Image (cartoon, rainbow, N blue to C red; front, side, top):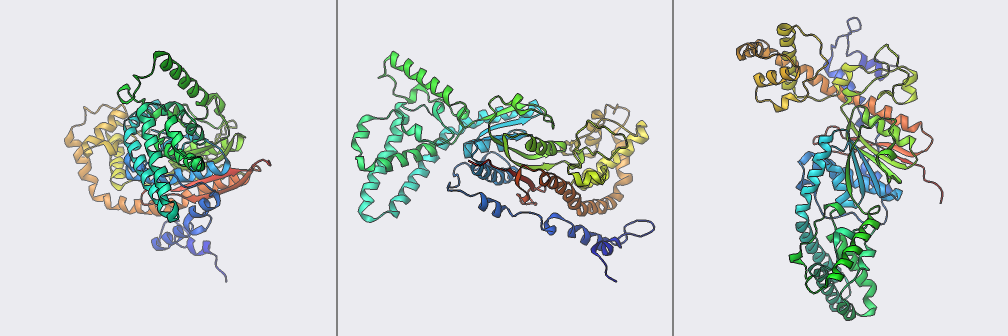
Amino acid sequence: MFLTDDDIFSSAFCENSEKLINVHLFALAAKYYSLSNLGVCTPLEDVLEALKGDSEGAAGIKPDEFMNNKKSHEVQVMSELVDSIANYCGIKQVIDIGSGKGYLSSFLSMQYNLKVYGIDSSSSNTNGAHERNRKLKKHWRAYQSRGKESLKSRSLEMANDRPVEHELNCKTINEELLNNANSLQNQGQVIIQDVVPSCGFTEMAALETNTETEADVGSGTQSHETKLSEEVLAVLNVLPVDAVEDFSSSHCNCGELCEEEKVQRKMTSLKTKARKSSESNLYLPLTSCITAETELSDIITDLEDCMMVGLHTCGDLAANTLRIFTAKPEIKAVCSVGCCYHLLSEQFENQEECHDQVWGFPMCQYLKDKGWCCGRNARMSACLLPTESLFYRAVLQVIIEEIYGVTKSDRHVGKTFSKSSSFVDYVRRSLKKLELDDSKLPDSCIMDYYEKYKDRMNELEAFNMLKVVLAPCIEVLILLDRLCYLKEQENIAWSGLVKLFDPVKSPRCYAVIALKNQPCS
C-alpha cells in the first residue's frame, strides 16, 4: 500500500481524540510544508540579476547610521531591490504604503534619488517622519565632505587605470575639476537645494561656472570634464531637495554682487525650483487611511507611473496594497512585505455574510471557492511572541476574570509588556488601558497570582515552541494565497515570492513582488 506524505504526517495526532501524540513527526511535517522547503520562492540574487541594467549600484549613505541593526538590514536590502525594479520599469515615483516613520522612504529618496510619497494612517508617525527628515539636514555637510573624499579616491583609481602617457593630463583635469567644485561651492555659484534633478545631473553641469577656469581646459577634454563634473555633483547631491540646508552668507562671497544681481539670481533660483519640483527627488510623508477602494490620485496630486512598496504592512493593508496595484494602471510594480497576520479579516470566519466588505483573507479565487478559513487561533499561532509575554498575559486574564468579573473586552493591552519593568507594573498598566480600577488590587495580591502560576511557565514554554514550529505553515498559506491572487490577474507579467531578509534579524522576511505587462513601444 502506498502512503502519501499526508498519511504519514497525520499519524502525529490521535485518530480519535485528535490530540498531538508525536511531537517529532509534527515538527517534521511543519518543516516539510514550510516556504523554504516547498521550492516556490525565487532567489533574491536571481531577481536582481534579471532586473540589472547598465546602471551601477549607488554608493554613499549607510542606513545603520540612522537606524537599529534590524531596520538597517531591512531598509538596505529592500531599497536596493526597489531601485532595481524602478530602473527596470523606467519609473521615478515610489509610493510607500504604511510608511511609519519613513525609514525606507527617506533612504530611497536619499540613496537612489527617487521621488517617494510615504502614506501612513497615523499622524504621529507622519509627524515623526517629518521631524526625522528635518534632523537629516544637520548631516548634510558631513555627507558633502565624504562625497569629496570618495570622489578623490575614485579619480585616483581612474587615473591609475589609464595608459602612462595620459596620466599627467588626467591628473591635471581631476585636480582642476575638484578645484572647480570647491570654487562653485565657495562662491555660491550653485544653490544645490534649488536645482537637484531626479533623472541625472547633466543640467547642473550646464549651470554658470567660472569662465576663466573653462578657458584653461582644452577642448579635447570637454567630454571627459563633463562626465567627471557630473560625478562630482552626483556625489555631492546625496540628500533630497527638501533635506538640503541653504548655504549661509558667511560661506558665500556675495559681497561682489550688486543688489540687482542678487535679486535676479534669487528669482532664477526660485523659478528653477518651481520648474523642477515635479521632477526632483524628494520624500513627502502623508497621512491617510488606505483601503482597497482608495483613489491614490486624491492623495497624490502629481501621481504618475510608479510602484508601490510596503515594509511590514499590518493585517489587511498588505492585501489592499496588492488590490490597488492590480486595479490602477499607473502602478507598474509592487513589492510588499506583510506582517501582523492575526489582524487579517477573514471572509469565512463568521457565519454573518457582508457582501460589500473586502476581506484580507482569502484573496485568490481558489480558496474562496473552497470557503477556506484559518481562524483567529491559527493566525495568532503565526505571531512570534516571547514566552514571558504570553505568561504575563495569561495570568492577567485570570486576574481580570476573578477580580473584575470581565470575560470579554473590546479593548486591548497592546505592547504593554515591552514597556513594563515588572509583572506588577505590567498588570497596572494593562488595567488602566482596559479602564479597570487598579486601586482595589494591592501589589501583594498581584504577586500572589504570579507565584501561584509561575511553576506552569514550562508548560507555556512548550506550548509556545509548538506555535513557533507551526507558524511558518500558517504564513505559507497566507503568502501563497496572495501569490495565487496575482497569478489570476491578466495584466501581470511576472509575480513571485522572494526571501528578502535574514530571518534571524527579521522573521517576517518574505516579499510578494509583481510587475505588470509593459506596453509595446
